[in-house]
Length: 198
Image (tube, rainbow, N blue to C red; front, top):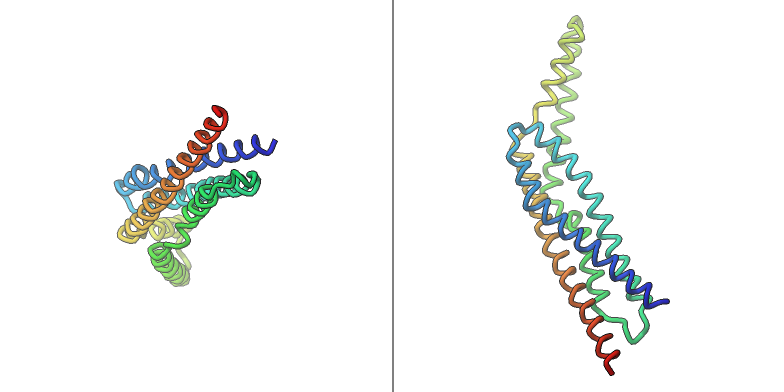
């Protein structure tokens, strides 16, 4: 019974690790470079914001499932089958899951600059509303739209490139873990074959 559970956990861990590696590779090689070609900084910023929110949630979920599966498989394995590759794979997957937390320098710089600009925009908006008390609602809506489109393209590009390099590093770490898991599972199967032949 424990053998089936361990095998299932290894299978789930390997599949989710493969998905994690593929997702981070796709983000770094296809998605972010495509967003860099968008014509306006505003549309690129909105698309990138949505992308990071969704992708990081999926990446962390896959990393959590995979890391937990390999660690639980190690804990539940019989003493003779407690292979260290399960622990190493679990550690590598956990490291790939927190890559964006370890390397947030670009994101912090751009986020703090963006927060400062948003505060400046709000103060300008308040000043403008006091100066133009008699203006119509249509004019105030138009000025609000102009303020929303004031996005610095260089900051957006810098943030995207930082995210892209974080994904490249995550791909390397997750790919190493995936290779470890495949070789380890193959080794487990080869060991079982030798025992059966005897």
